[in-house]
Length: 415
Image 1 (cartoon, helix red, strand yellow):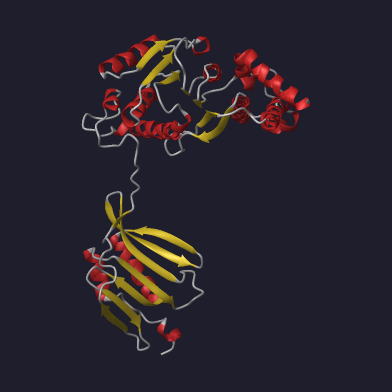
Image 2 (cartoon, one colour; image 1 turned 90 degrees about the horizontal axis):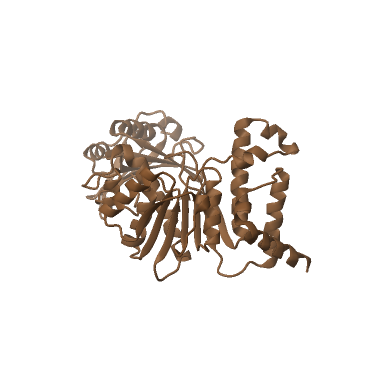
């Protein structure tokens, strides 16, 4: 019997394969030696059991040239799909279990030859979890006093369904903070300001990170305009006996750190120029690390204009998005000029909340290279000129300090 004649026969899966799949005792099934090497099905099929969302499934992998395509199937779908693949497309197969290996092969007589062999994968697990379990800095399932106090967790450590998005957001933000710990002083009490702290989910989380995980002494000050919110947060902090955590009512633009040092400055969704005020206060206080997630931005929107980009800026929503991006680019460049190594990254992905940009700035250990400083200053001024920006709040808030830096850079450029 030729291979062409063989391809038109109906072959069922060997009984041993079907029984093993039904019993959930399969480690792996492999189908190989395609009847038609040019078939779109590919050169090989691999099947393995997985757990998806707590339920048993099988994952099918089709190998096509240099690519591998995956499909997750239920039990009934698996039997049907594997039967068709074996009957129509492949001539040889292997079944691996903890008790034995099976090699099955189509013969020219239209039968299937099956050979049982000692197991080669007896130490392999019968099933693999395909669920991605995220390892959070604040783990789910372990009671956390401040998360219970702010209504995110139950006393048993279970995250409330309506608060899961907030739980993920808190942990994601902590990951960013955790990444910059090496940029902070290694010893002594850490001074941390949270500008525009609001309900202070993240203020409490940062206190937890530094006191519970990093075992550091802290002096964390949360600042917000709303007296009632500040009072509620202070009440929670007192009840939980959060050492080194306090809240104050005040305007960011008029905030005076006084004798309190600032090692880390954070501002999350401080509206419009309040973000600039927070950045300016942090720079003037000599903060080692500055973290800012901007909110709405109106100052640049009122000024922005560019003849070459008229087609873009004539649409309100596009102009608004452009103004926001330009504003954050200017903020990043001001921070660079002021001696910080700056990154602009995505804060939370779109699965959880609309895209947010995080401006992350870590103070440089030494002074800027004069040539690099001049390049950054030229880029900053060029961006302002390109979009017709005459006035920028952050630049004004820094006042003489920023003007002197720019003046020094220009002078070195002419020497």
